[in-house]
Length: 446
Image (cartoon, rainbow, N blue to C red; front, side, top):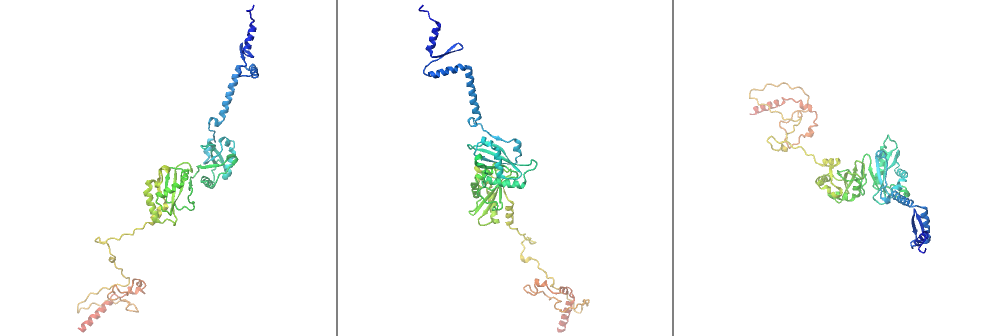
């Protein structure tokens, strides 16, 4: 009898020995004792919680909580490093023939929520009639917390392009924004400050005068051109070094300065290549043709040396050519050679005295009449035509012309002799009668 024990009593004693809180799950006894980890009150609450939830329910809850955390990390770009961006449809991007970009000090998600307001502010700064502004893309910038915004200017009508006059005004405005001569002001509370304005494409090309250069109205005529595999932005960022190296390469004087214009035929400030139009201006005035000829020689000599430009910064100089103005100035300064005189009959050079004498139109040497033998008088000449001269001396020239040093008749005076027709109609036989009379007198005296 003493050895007999009640099984239920033994079981209860075991349960109490394990702990004050004990329960059974599917026939398995689980006890939570007062072991120092949980207090009595916490143990009681934990027992009540376990009475309401099963092990399977607890596992599902844990898995659901893990999925919720994964979704939270997925929707946060900063947590998972995903680049959120905005891109307009391809049809809209292809229709935008004028495109530009700038940088904003805001994140992409903030700008996406205010994209319509951004387009409205940009159009308010441009104010070109019959046009509209469309944001083409917004991408995260390399600068922390900034966004690169690309926008396009389109015509309101899908069938007609932008007016050429308005397009020219828009080109001038874009160039001023690029050179930071004006600012693109937007709503600061939503978009912050703009920076790094660039022109991506513009119909008809662009011509920009880099900073620290003369105004387009003060730049003289273009002297020469060359091509560089650079962008307008790269030339703009290194404009001082560019002009100083070019001035040194052309061997310009201290009173001479060089000015450049940079053109891109695609109308872009970020894409190569560019054509550089160079001019030289002197503090003393315009360059004389002789100085232009010297510059042309220097350009031809130093074109193989890259015109003095650094290869590492500006690359190779290509297609160097003189402008039409410089070529015409050099040709006008070159003297015109006079025609060489023809050599003499024996090959010797002609002398000034060998020129043929100029005959006077009204004074000529009369021919000496032939002598007649004695006793055989010459037949009587035919009667001369009757002329009523007023002065016989004016009708007959002297027997021998005056000496070369005389000034009886000059070439200028001979052109204004009165009545030249009377000289041309003199009697050719009058000299015979004079010689005949002299012969008779000589016979009578001797």
